[in-house]
Picture 1 (tube, one colour):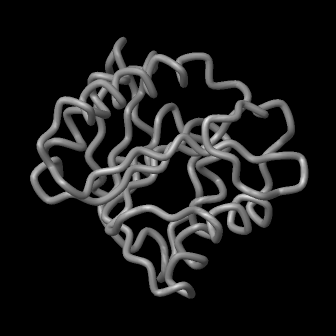
Picture 2 (picture 1 turned 135 degrees about the vertical axis):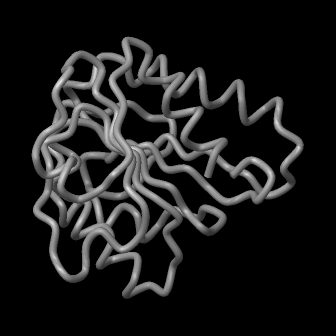
Length: 166
């Protein structure tokens, strides 16, 4: 991915304690990259539902509608990779539909310790990678879907590896 450009949007999640570490890891890697059209978006949702980048208001629950509305105002090079954690992963089918309706291309989804959304005819619409930070057993949904999955005590390193490979 680093050679191809594009964007990575890290979705907000209040319970994600390793989020800031992941942002730092990705920001460092992006700064060292020579890719001309590569962008990291640290998305937080303001109280009014409008996207604020680099503003940490992660205490309100994230609902799919607010997340999709916020993503409409985010300018990020395509194709986009979404990184989501825990319950925010449940909003990804709505995010995929929103992106399709805006004619925006999605490269992949990276899910960290996810609450898994149901697969359907329309989701996932591109590759999905799953990183478990502490679990040693991938859910049956992950195994049956054929999604790439890995267990790692350093989820940030695995996310970076996934992004570089793909």
